[in-house]
Image (cartoon, rainbow, N blue to C red; front, side, top):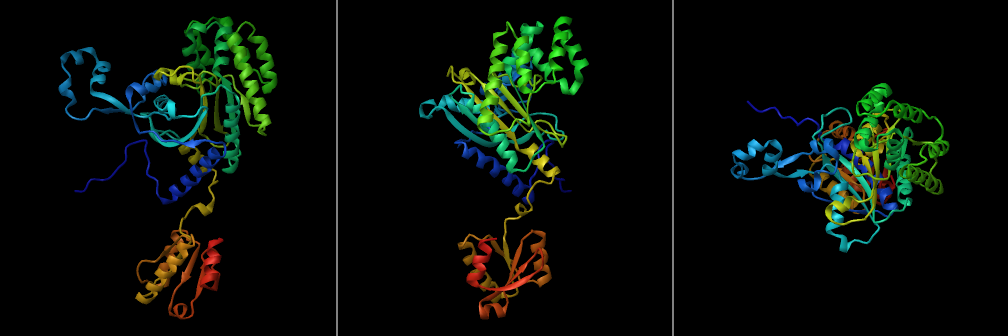
Length: 456
């Protein structure tokens, strides 16, 4: 009995229709990246685990897909390895893993190629990443990221340009219902300072990041268990409940953060970024200064941001931030970088649910040429060659068939035009062109046909 085919959970096939839509999405994003001076880069799917581990926090490390060493890897182990526990055994049998994101491999690339790079270095990267996560709506084990990063400068102009790209990309995709949340890891450190949680900063961020999932009461309960005093929790509650606009919220927090140098520095960063965004022509109506924004990746050090749709139930679709010394873990100290990542699969799902994909992206063939017999086929092949030489995507129906069958094929493939090639067309070199959308037909010479199809 034949085995029933299946896919692992958390991965998907993409048929032609989905691929046309994905390519439209990817081409839109890459087109904006190029406008802002970013250059393309690719890194391997596989990285050494020493490159990946320790960069994403404990939770991220647990989601790494590890690859077993090839060959008889168990021959290199003995009883003492098993007695030492799973962690030590893992080191013996696996040294590589699938990349978790594009930023850490990018930092590794920068360090390895630092003598050949012109800084500041602006690169974009469009590749799949893998996470051993629990599959659910909007969360996959294999998915594409579109990243743009600038490394080798501390300028907050970079953050503002990344926000301008968000605005332009979603405008081109006609996605109007979204919100940008912006903050800084330094502001989170300031919050921790003023509530008495400085020595519990990492745990504080993890709990704060869960606020929208577990609610304020449960969040405060978990923070209390960290040992944060009630006075500190009361102060945090008052801060989180601020409902002022971005400018007023910054000014209020300046008073709260008196005595927290790092907190004031974070506020200055947000204020400057918003100012640069205004100079770039980016309206602030979709930008929200969000004090609860924590971003789980541990390598962020400055401005952080994320984008969520507001009319579709979906998680973060775009996110990123400043990382001051990610290259330092690979031996290149003091090189600051900032980046942004567009989650292609989630953005695809949002556009699909909102019916925002253009209908003309559903097919690549502009015209099909009919085939009724051997003589018609030879003429049709010559005609197809002329059309392709003029950059018209076309195909010839591969075997003689009745008109109904051929037109049905064109309809199912969303081919907008059909050119009839019969004996009359061969004799006169005048062709009947059928518009498959409205059913209208008209006759054209070869030159007229080429000119017509090339402009559609």
